[in-house]
Length: 303
Ligand code: RIB
Image 1 (tube, rainbow, N blue to C red):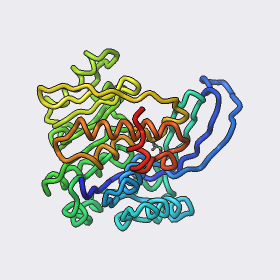
Image 2: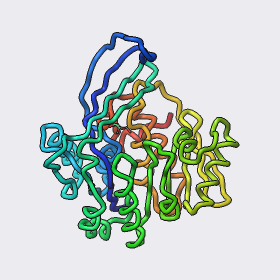
Image 3: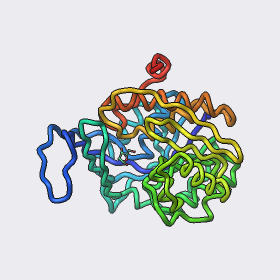
């Protein structure tokens, strides 16, 4: 994809590193706190920009220092931020992330300005949709915005990519036939479809319910078990790369952006492998946007 428009969230991440995450009612001692630019939309835009893709973003930040830091980080990789509005009423979104030594995390998000977007603003930005080859969305902005953006992108004949994260059970049915590519992990796929995804057979059955509803391609990321691609009748499995993870934050965002940076509409195998290598490098580093590798680093990584 030569030119990508990202419609999505921007959050300042508060990353707390600890040996293990506390159970309910338990207190644990943590090791450190880092503030890192994040948000699923901004992470994807940042990664696309860093990989040399002409990228623009629609979103919202607050009139505060975090908002400015988010914009500055996107500018550092040449992302066009003209579509990111500054909310008068809301603070920049924030995410509180607990990361344990295994690299696994738990995330709580305060939407803030991310929820100060509406369908009318999407309509005002029609020019940005017309200029893009692909439009990418996630679910940290209001669902009405995702639906309006998907409709606008489809009407302009663009590739419509929806990352269904954070997962929601009441995904609007009208959205499915608008989606060319979606990238759930097993948990998101289960929530989205209401079906179990504990075995590979169950994952396939659940993914097929999405293609039956009109989704073009379902790429299910299975962590260390790789990626399952379901398109119509075709099913392909792609391996993951084995690395020692220190922080899995934004691994999925990095995968999707790297995939899109290589994708020409048909070369799924090549683009998924590039995404898998990119996310393998990202999980060996701390933070969201701070973990995104360069193209040279991805090219040099072979597992
Ligand atoms: O996908 C990772 C992102 O999820 C974090 O950067 C955090 O902001 C949340 O949106």
